[in-house]
Length: 153
Image 1: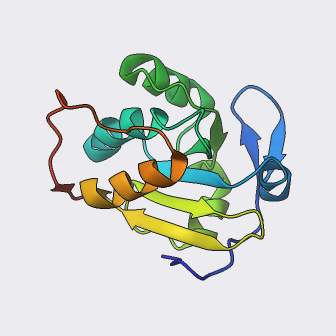
Image 2: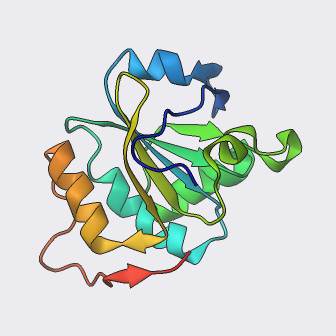
């Protein structure tokens, strides 16, 4: 898996239901968080709603689904995840996932406008996610949330 300091690989993926979107076009609007996930992954089901809470802060936030558009939309509906979703499906042999060296999901990256990865996390690590939330300038966890410190993917 790529680490902070690495350059993010260029990609162009389908934006679920709305054409194609490239990394370069996304970064023109500012730094972006990319959360790679599968709809059937229990850790992803827990993590993505928390990651969605930082949307609207200082960082753009995108899900990168390893599933098709229909299953991804159902995931969003069931788990209340209101994020733009890019599709990196098995039928295409997961081009973005392979380029980022994804072995487990969720895998999350913060990519700066210069294309450099400045933060990365694999699985669910509350302390790492809190660091990302601080950078986004938005709370990710609330006092009433029952969140584990770590949950493997």
